[in-house]
Amino acid sequence: MSQLLIEGGYPLCGVIDVQGAKNSVLPILSAALMSDGECSVLNFPEITDTYVAIDILRALGAKVVKQQDCITINAKNADGYEIPYGLMRKMRSSIMFLGSILAKNKKAVISLPGGCELGQRPIDIHLAALRKMGVNIEENHGFLECSHSGLKGCEISLSFPSVGATENIMLAAVKADGVTDIYNAAREPEIEDLARFLVKMGARIKGAGTDHISIEGVPSLSGCTHRVIPDRIVAGTYLCAVAATRGNALLKNICPLHIYAVTSLLKEAGCDIKIYDDAVSIECDKLKSVPLVRTMPYPGFPTDEQAPFMALMSIASGNTLFIETIFENRFKHVGELLRMGAKITTEGRVSLVEGVKKLHSATVQATDLRGGAGLAVAALAAEGSTVISSVEHIYRGYENFEYNISELGGKIKKI
Ligand code: EPZ
Image (cartoon, rainbow, N blue to C red; front, side):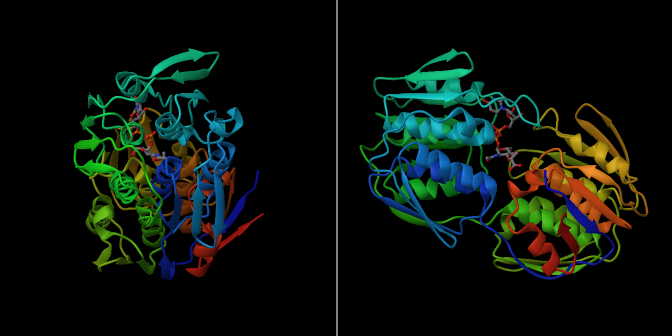
């Protein structure tokens, strides 16, 4: 279990090129499985989750070649329909290979993804939709055994605008017989990016990015080339780190609209934010708390930014109430922030943060991907040197993390 040593108190200043979006490239790699040709995916982030997805594609028989930040996938002869247990357990979002495997084969066998640090993470919405499309699904000793005699388009209304379920249905629907209408669909930018990729392959999709997506099945999908959108969550995390250290930085290669919910709260907290076409600059010398942060489906404040923003608010003047409406157990980083001197009271899905002047160093443990990133934000601002263990969580989603922080003047190293 590797550790990071971070000496806090150095303002982060300079320029960062933001990586490609993890939560866009993962469903896109799944979609590439359905192509009869060759797909090239650019702006590929080098993080552990994307390498797990490559291992899954290879386990299913696809040829995958990586050159710099371009991944080429040829899945023409990939006739695998089982995802190895070990890979399913490495990354729960492997569930979104189910839709593409079923679009390509008459059967699929995958293990139940299991819970994760954020809570139970059920897949009932995914399974109800696939059953409606004609998939017979049996749960057997922790495995899902799926089979069908042809996927049928249908009307599906989601009980919650689940990102993964929306993506899985899109993947199953693009080659189904007839039209699939998804109501109460997730509207995240990553959904739109997946739709752009699928349309380039020849799919017929309307409404991605809205709460009603309509997909008309086509007989086959060709290859294509696609550049993945920038990672809005990574961008927001670096903005929080610059603000926490009273720094001054320019983040390039981002879609400002995708992080509007975060930049508007940072402005309310007293940061000087400038928006350009594909960049955002931030400068912060005085930080005040914002009274309420409620996580919501896009375009609301993203649940994935809750921990980094909480680290920032823990050193702002005043109180902030955090309401985590998306996941039932996404405050595991609170206990670690308390060890650094933060003042936070948590009850269920609500946390009250009373800003303190300074955090102090401590030995802390990353509990999950974004919780770990939040601890790094706190450590960069804290007095003294903090050791964060289990930093593999951070490497799941943040490419070249130490390099980027060091380039901005942060004192960070792996130990
Ligand atoms: C995606 O997860 C993201 N992961 C998550 O990012 C993100 O936090 C989440 O969307 C919400 O934005 C990827 O895209 C790979 P959901 P997903 O289905 O699809 C409940 C990160 O840090 N639900 O929208 O799993 C679920 O329990 C990760 O990058 C059901 O009840 O999220 C949760 O409470 C973490 N039944 C809520 O919906 C279902 O069948 C949102 O889940 C599916 C979901």
